[in-house]
Length: 298
Length: 280
Image (cartoon, rainbow over all chains, first blue to last red; front, top):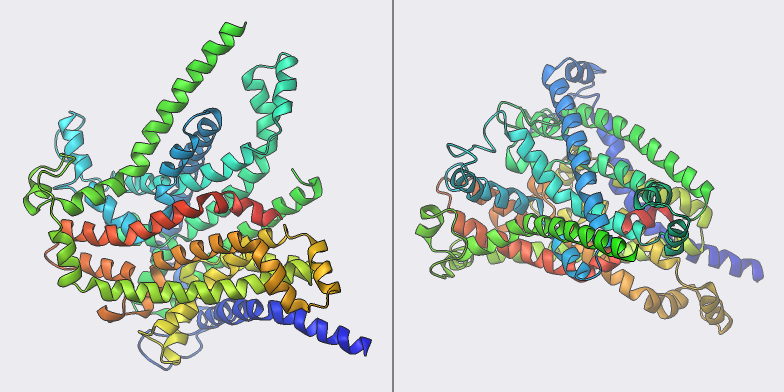
């Protein structure tokens, strides 16, 4: 009887996690496995039949100069966006942590970009930066900062920087909020003790603040790296990878190959390569996590 | 000594407040500009690009959006898809997160890591198999197909966030209920859920926002205008030859305002959840 009860109890316990396991299995692991499978085939978006082609897709992708340039664009896009997001998010968090009055209202306003759907990010900025009627180009001319309306989204020299700016605008709030909550876990008495010992503000910052929040910031940077690297919507909706593929990143390249050229097999090969690259970054993430758990709660 | 401290703090205050004010203007400007542009008259948008406030206030753009473009249909599609995703996804995630915390702490750790890893999968990676699978099951242009694919990103993230909330439930309360003769499911529904309700609501709202905002899968799976979600129909409006920015901004306002309001409601609960959820 007791054994039976224990058995029933085990079954009930399993029922709790079963749906989540099914979702992960059927909606994530299986599709990824099938992606790997299709990457070795000539699968086409429209035709039903396909055959095995071995490593042909991978050879094709890796020898395509466009893939290489989109990979470099991805690295550039990720690095610049991340540096900006961390810089702005971190300094904003420090400022928010410093002030006494109005923290709530500033915080509420500053997180607005986070809530934006990608399509509205794209449309609003395209409108604000529009080369004919845009607010910013006209403002720059009015202020005498430009002689003619700057084409911020179509000129080859400006477009990448503009996209990175928009991505910083969108991503900095997330960093800010997380760093702020990490800052608030730093015990106040440590600052007081340091102050009594004659430490300057800068010294306290380096020896108390930085060690306390470095792990959280490290985790955030890794997570953010992956998301920014994966980002498809922002660039696709604003420039579509143009002008002249200048802003084409790997996810956009994969989309163009799969849905533009209808070559799903080749597109799968691109996404599998992308996944391998990201799994390596994931491994780094878990290494940080492990170290953190060993060090105990912060 | 004291005066010096006061002076320095005043200096730091000035810097902090000015910096935050500048950032706030940049952060809020697109939302503000959407709203202002949506109520300006036609000539005003192109005639005077740098004027802030509308000279004449009009709701014509909103009338066009609702009347001519039948945007209401797409809003309903998005509400159904995002709402169902939230309901199903959060239910699955709440059960899963509780199961991980209470019954399978060791296996749970592995499962949580798998969930985090899957959350890092590039959406484009899943787009290829989804388009093939959804086609095979005849679910192209169907809300059900879209809801199923949305579970793929909402469940892992919700589990991840919820594990943190369930860990705050004291075991003693549950044990007391067990002693009183309640079984696991009764304990979960009557004892545990009421305690974590605020957290679950926050996660549900966040799930809703993410599904409401989603673009890529909807782009790939929905291709008839009346079945499209708001994000994709906005994109298709942009492709039309005569582009009316006032109308576009009115439609954008209708998409972004629910997101912003919901987000502000839950900001305190989700804040820091990213880093914390992964640690706990």
